[in-house]
Image 1 (tube, helix red, strand yellow):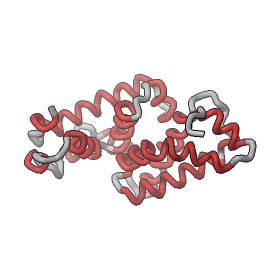
Image 2 (tube, rainbow, N blue to C red):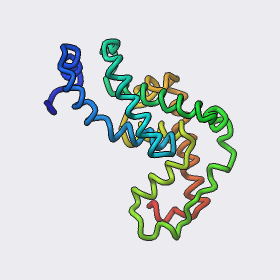
Image 3 (cartoon, rainbow, N blue to C red):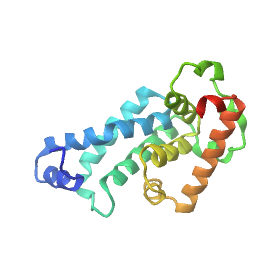
Length: 188
């Protein structure tokens, strides 16, 4: 069952083999959780939203038209669910994005001394987690999920050029965090 494509699994679920959906859950739970954790900045909220996302995907599987990859369709559900969670918590992503020059995101909780013994991947994940939710999501999708800018634009429902702008701003923010906290030696 693990060697089947997403399309084959979806067809099986649509034919009534509901237990086969667990294969899709196993394939996407870790990456989706990572993306949610970066956006929501809270493990509990990320777990709650992830469960809702799989439930939404399962309940709406009949609407999946195979026009894009299942992963793209599912990450759109994940991203939109995270935005809904953020807006219900009275956070405004638009304000965070419009204030890219605002240095409050650069006020890192971490200093270079904190990472002397930590693995580089842990350090990088902590720095990415400091980004605004939309930036963290795009960085996760592009670098960790290895999604193309075209796939990301489908998930976020924005243009490719906007995805590129967010990636550019995210890289700049990451560089500023690294420079401000003197973490350059730890990251290279």
